[in-house]
Length: 192
Image (cartoon, rainbow, N blue to C red):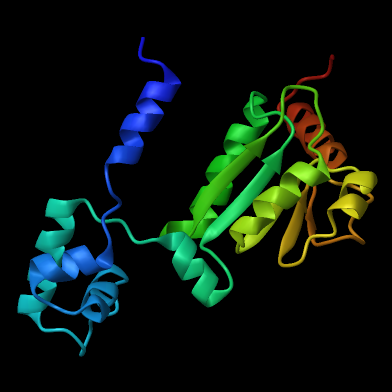
């Protein structure tokens, strides 16, 4: 098996493809490359130039530098979900729901701790350097939230009693159990 050091050094030999390289290949300006790569061509870029830029992007394997874009905008398209245990099947449904809600404009980044371990505010603060568009925190403690002091949109998941810190989405297990009991009783079930 190839060592991580060897793979890492090989990866560093390939230069990152830039918008300037795409522009040179397509025979257009870097501004035109930016417009095409970001889907902002309507009324601004000819169909011929769009085609040439897309061909150059495909040939060179160009990817928009989202970090640079986020610096210019002050926020990225990343939403971070901090969860204590992704092995819990419940979180698969949470992740699917979050991804569906975010749509194609945002990317979901998971920050997962080891099973049974709570996330540390200092670890999450490092992720805030990515300038996320939002932060979702599953099952946080009050201490975690006080230490975090995150700026920007924050939503708590499964955090009963902590609604004063941020908007929260909480499970109502008691109501669900009552509805299940009513359903079973209405179906004729009388024993537990």
